[in-house]
Length: 353
Image 1 (cartoon, helix red, strand yellow):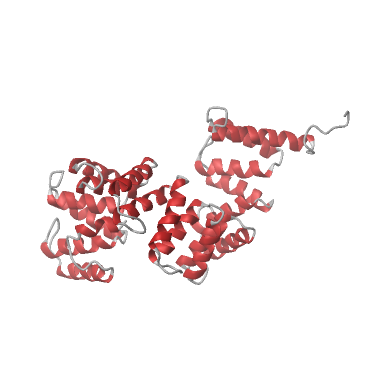
Image 2 (cartoon, one colour; image 1 turned 45 degrees about the vertical axis):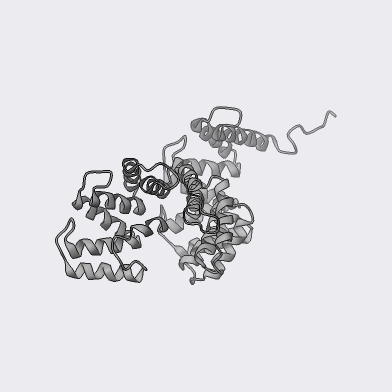
């Protein structure tokens, strides 16, 4: 036994590098120790110096998020590209986001798609999911809803929560596949169980509107609360709607206004829209028509369709602004095209997340 390799077949350098990396992972995740991002980043850095590729990538992520080190996208890009060039799939996928978002490097959807495709060909669920997004929006590739659905579906089979949610969207809205409310709910629920806040909000919407599942307002409140705990502003606005209408919880318009305000301050269009209605009508808050108009405008600028109708009414009747027949007609046409031809479409607010 004298010649037994106690390093699991690794060279002394690789063994030490992996030891630093594993220690970094423990501090990053809180596995048996208190979470400490500085110690995590320090251990990743020691491992990265020894050329350990997963540590190079993880250190890059720390710089992207400013966790344990000062946020530095240029440093993050250098590390991510280094790991990507060394064959790390997670790094290659992340590198694609630099090109997709135009941070550090010039935005280049074609380059991003090339990288996402390469990652997808190796079965990387994030690459598949983001390639699907590109097909859905026609960014860097010709728009193709069926290919988008295929990418989302394949990524969802790897239990990738974002992709499960996207498959849910496809079934919910009939994008690239026949609409099916029950399947939409099923995929939203799978992602929600993983703690994915967007999906938790979507599950709440399914329960609120009886989409693919029996209507259950208390369950809707539960899922909006779960997503709201993670800071999802749309869920916070939807929870506010439940308080305003007394659906699944005791009616409390003042609480609704508080939640709408939180969501609005996070630039949530539903939050802005619902807060605007309360301010216009003096519901749970002192009436302020000028501020209401401003919020309707902010929601409309985010292409929140139900806000178009209310903004048209504001311009037509001079609510919070000077009357302007031309702008009233413009927003009325936008509302009609979006399927909201009438103003004061309160009843539809819960369906437009």
